[in-house]
Length: 179
Ligand code: 5GP
Image 1: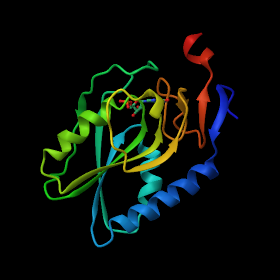
Image 2 (image 1 turned 90 degrees about the vertical axis):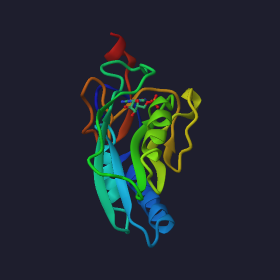
Image 3 (image 1 turned 60 degrees about the horizontal axis):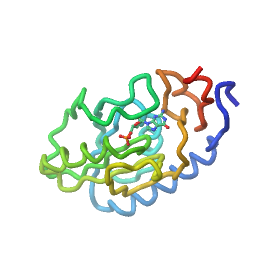
Image 4 (image 1 turned 90 degrees about the horizontal axis):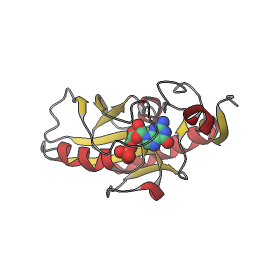
């Protein structure tokens, strides 16, 4: 285990098994259609790359950057689009791929923005979900794991730009961000 982790919450194997299941469900739900997979950079990139390869219907890739926590561990409460999608999504089935839903602020604001662009549908797939922290209502269509209220890193998730390459998901030691 990495020295800065207090605990491993999800191993590489547990993540892979769940991502496989999610891909199968998405494949079944979108049978006969194609999907525009919208990756929310940077945290979702690992999940996005793994999930895309478990989906067996045609997909397109697109990417967005939204404002996040910066170097802090608490939400700023507002959302800014720093890089928009390249594609015109009118008439398309859009699946937003997110790393983690915490307060729900980001997706509760982003989903209506995309829906207003006349997408045929806009759904959400998230690797992690912290329901106990929710402040804004978000309907999650595909949910990897529900986790407790703790700050986690790994599998794409960072703290101050670090730990994204850990293959597991773990709780970061408080001493790393409070010390
Ligand atoms: P929300 O808008 O739902 O509060 O937060 C969503 C974003 O906050 C996520 O995309 C992620 O960037 C960040 N976030 C929330 N919880 C955590 C966490 O436990 N660890 C990390 N690394 N980022 C988090």
